[in-house]
Image (cartoon, rainbow, N blue to C red; front, side, top):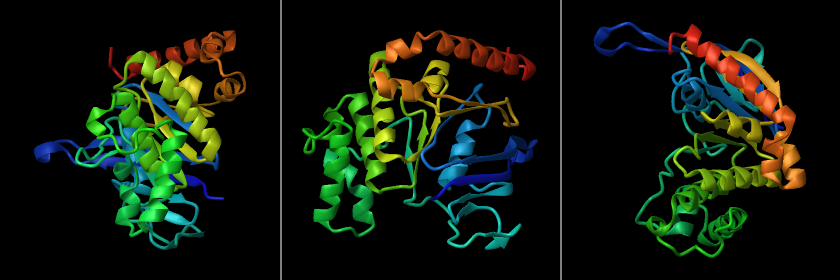
Length: 281
């Protein structure tokens, strides 16, 4: 099965108007295994979105390379370091679905037309793409809204359409860039649970960015914490709070467990310590 691997990756952005370069990421090495739900957490400006953009193929690393299965996302030539890098990918691809903080839906299309849009671009026939779009709209609880204009939907429902659209292309992994950050607190909790149900149902690899420590602990099967710029992975934690929720279906119970609270305080102390070291206080 496919896994995502990141090898010695660094990203340096050119300075504005000939100014000093910005080293956004430095020496990133880690792997996302099939079925993992990895969440990235860290102070603002630590490079979380840059890391996701590398995985999506939106940008290329300055140093190092990334692979997904036997596909290269960016970096080295076909064969390097003994790794066969055939099926090179030079940009975004259907094997990596992206859900953005803002839904990025097309307002002139209705719900099901937005959901099947990627398949239409790929030339998939109408019957097949409608069947696939219908399946994933049902998975996210929107089976009764196929023909609704997207501008009539709430923010949470629009994000559900974005999730269904990403899943309809049957990607190997889903990349989620703070997809719940703009939602109200109650809707955010509902969609946290929905995403865990989608993860359980599809067994997709997930990479999720958030600024919320509680959300990170609740969602992640593995949590990575990144340092202030240049971003490095400084801590990793294997977690099972998401599995506990899927067993008991009581998010409040899970988030009030003593070990959840203790882990939340530990992670907060790490991030606050990094902020002080990074000069953000």
